[in-house]
Amino acid sequence: MQWQHPEISRVIRSALEEDIGAGDVTTEACVPAETRGAGVFLARQALVLAGVELLPEIYQVPGGIERVQLLHHSGDEIRADEAVARVEGRLRTLLTAERTALNFLQRLSGIATLAHRFVRAVEGTGCRVLDTRKTTPGMRRLEKLAVAAGGASNHRFGLFDAVLIKNNHITAAGGIRPAIERVRATGQPVEIEVHSRAELEEALDCGADHLLLDNFSAAEVAQAVRQIGGRARVEVSGGITLETVRAYAEAGADFVSAGALTHSAPAVDLSFRIGLC
Image (cartoon, rainbow, N blue to C red; front, side):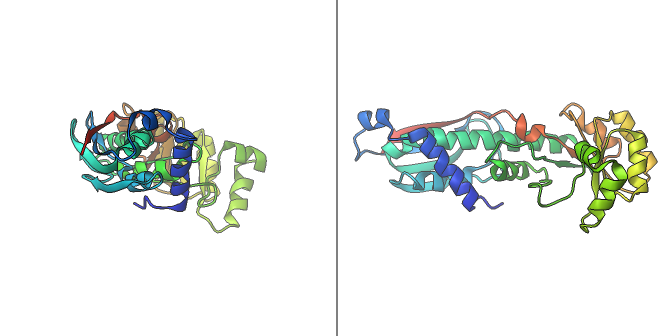
């Protein structure tokens, strides 16, 4: 997983600028400039870690840090009260960057932890869990890295890297057949969203490679899988939860896509504790 990227660097700088502004007035008033210290990031719950590799760059921006020690890496399963990283250097920097560092770690580890739970829920079925484009604006690269840290798979990164014909495309194109025929001209594999078994059959007749069954029940997916008979790959989406995802996988879906991985993952509980050197 590549946690170093120009887009990520811009997000980090923007987050620090948003929080620090013209300066950390509390820290600058309370803490002498020459004071050194060390801080430890602690997991307060069991979690799957993501984003810890960002810490060196987060602390590099304000400067004054002598050592960032990563005790674990993204994708590691962490126990409650386990340390994940240690930082040493100017105490002012430790305090000023604390909230930004925690915001990244808590948010991204929350996504990784939820993704891991989804993957565990379908274990043994052969079904893969996919993410979606339902990400926080400006945070897509980071959130998709967190999904991968949790063991799920990244689907489309954006509109530019894969075809997915959705219901509004079908309406705008004048129907399933013209939509598929126009996409065929691009040479891309055709994935199309369908909402009924009649639409499913029409899409198959037009040569669709990948069918996205949207808002089908698990029982309806099982019927659709039999109807498809291996003629196309089957993906399901629409309100998939941890409680229901295995039923969809056992119904025969090749993929389950869940927007919840990124838009509804709760932040995990991580803390930062400092001491003087």
